[in-house]
Length: 464
Image (cartoon, rainbow, N blue to C red):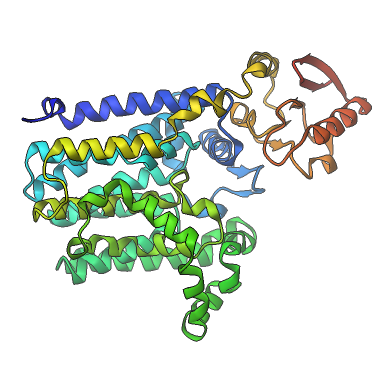
């Protein structure tokens, strides 16, 4: 007996998924649970580009290209010319994650799976916990690379060169580090899929963009190499530069072995594989070769955020896991043969690992200041500089200057701002009620500011 979802087309599934994911991320944002890192950062950059201004992030103090060389924000800014709202980014994210269903559906049928099996794998992808969780974690351009990567694999299989080139451009424009993934996709295509032309193009593109972005674009737009060092801090035990790390790989391999084999990494691998463990076979896992760069960085990193199913760091591993599952099913080597058991396992893992429960717990913590936050925001009528908290910043980030009331903010020159919007009850990330009190006292002592709104420990100071 076929499951009832078999009557739906992949397009219908994409529409339903997009609406659901967009609703969830929007509700989180409305509840003041989205954060400056990273929604406000990317909203500010996209807005400034749409206004024809340099997208210099007042959070990072660098041009947005100096962060990850993410040129994707330039075409994304066109949406802000139609409707200038942070909800554009949230919708693009929900659609991008959902749109991965279509290439998965076609990839499954290309491998000879039935329509019902293809739809089942599409649902397995959507029910993978990280898809839901990353949709809630602000916005990241990584989500656009997911369907692009799946389309790229399909294009290579079908010998569609122009589609393949288009997907490479999209993937590389999302984040410079994805050039490493593109290189390994090329290696997989050349040596295991016998797609030498497509593989060589991917390898050449990945190597070229890695050198251009890390040696030229990021240093220029961040004024120096400090931003690269900021990311390399996660691997400081391996070396202080790319060359140091490469040298230690050959002369101090024990450093890498110690970084790889530990309990947190074992836990991470279990979390990563358990949702689709039923469909993995070592014999048919060759697509996972392409995931080696991302997986290695996550395993070697000292940043615990790279070892969970909550953040974006593991997102580009999912396409290769799905392709591996498709191949295993094609060869009839999966643990589960019937669609109903596959979906049941996916649902169990989703219920266990997806963070839908946040809507009844942590997302409601600050509900008692929700009205005051909105009323204070409504009184900010100018596009001037704002000093505010991590959770309020994404609601005010469409301006050239916005900074966070966090540790170190007590040394700011308040005269650079037009508004100070402070929530003392929920001060936000890397802040405290004591810090907010200090900023309030500085504002009261500054003759340029006046208190124009206060309620429920929410304070709005405006420049006279």
